[in-house]
Length: 99
Image 1: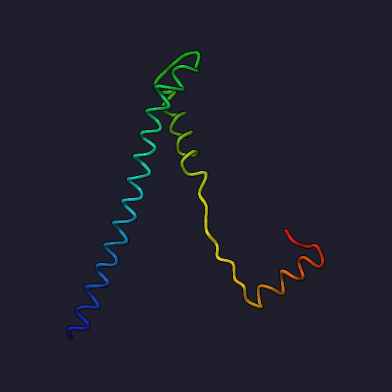
Image 2: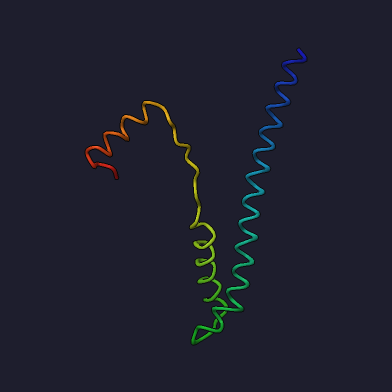
């Protein structure tokens, strides 16, 4: 009985922790975008554009900041050193079919 209660409480805790991390990441990204937009409007767009308009600058800066902050996402992919991975690599290198 105690084990089942403990298991249920751990499951609930994991769900809450996962949701907290997701919301934290979303808030962090939106804060960074807001800072970037404020900096972009005052320092770049208003000085560069011929007809400075805060509304058009805000739209352009939001698009620029969203792509700038999310365009350099990188993923770590582990390289396996097993036989199943070695044989295709050998064939790829031998027949020069690597992409």
